[in-house]
Image: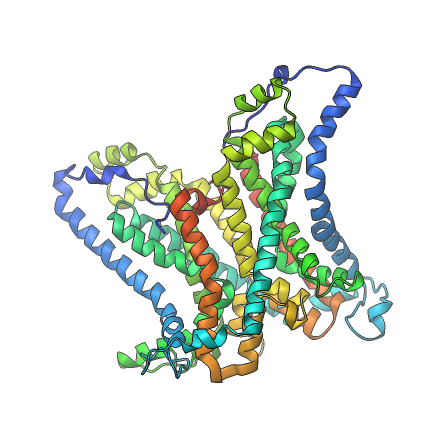
Length: 293
Length: 307
């Protein structure tokens, strides 16, 4: 996970300004020291998670376990919990795929046609990205009750997609802007429709951007707790986030080891996905096209 | 950002209306599915929320099926409700403390510290800080609950250096959730500021250094002014994100002890889903939306040139 900071190739050219050399060295030492302290401070809260997950008698203490065990992981991968992880996968994959299918065609005219056409729409989308989704959940619950959509995984997926779409369209449009239009013009001359040009030329050329939007939506949905917590009441339909919370409430203090193991298993997919995307695409993910400062 | 505009002349300037109609359809049709979904599940609920906030609609009981219009009763109740005032205040403190001060200043400091450090140091520190950000919010909540517990890691550390710990989640609940949120969100600001820093021209800083400007003055008069836009955009983004934080607080304190960490999202949840007063919850949601809307408009004004 190298972060977005890798763009300073000049540092190797160090022997400039030799007068400030010693002071510069001291400043660097202080900086390294501070960075080390920060890194440790950020790392400490993780300690309990890792230690408790492999401990046979886990509590809230971050004790070194008497006996290392992987039993917590084995015990937590039971039928119900696996089912919850599968529900998470269905929700997240569904939302991510649907987002791409809807956002790509919507972003295309916004990127390609005149600003006078797209500008008000883009401004509206940008405004929508700022609204707190948390607040919309109260009326959505009312809507779901009236339309008898509570406990419906497809309806929940649609809601999660809708709330992510403004950001997704905005990001897609930004990535699309980077694809030169000349190639499509050639395709148009050859008689290809706008849709074919999008599918065959633009989308393949902006594959990194598409991957970012996909990962972004997937990770946000996977990590979402509040939406499924409200809209999916039936335990058989709940994703892992809600299942872990309920599990914790039900079994309480007796099973911190299981809680930690479940939390790690649940976090793993998004961490792995983020790392992979970061490795392959470099800095693109860091700014997600959405925040171009 | 490159705004690829088709010069009007490259398109066949069709004066005839059928062709123009087809072209308009070609532009609008691809937008329809996405915007239909947004209208149904995003815009629709907001409008319903406005309506519901003027009714006594509830989750159970007589008013669940036949809600009555009650005018401004929910809003009047809200403004005379001390719990609302308190939760508004807690939300302001939470946003100021964890986003505007914590994440923003922390992210800037980290970005500056990491600039021109060794590649490996940047990778390691970056991975740890970003790791806290990538973790699902729920897990972050559990992790901090355990970290600050009576016999948790933090008290163990304090004990090891001879200090007496506390029940942090009871003694200082708001500070606890603020620090947890700083831990979770600093990575975002750090990434934004690192990218912005790498766009500050190096020769400008070198020229100033040759002229004898101290590193503080270079930061104050060159780096920060050049990053102004990034700072403003980032401040808006993290303010909007922090305003809506629910899960982290819900897991760590549940809004308590008592109502000491009951920010607006938590209060809204409790009114609507625990006390089943959907109408009152809707009025609270409208306030939350309005606050978000105001910030969003400011954000929009700053991004206007980019669209």
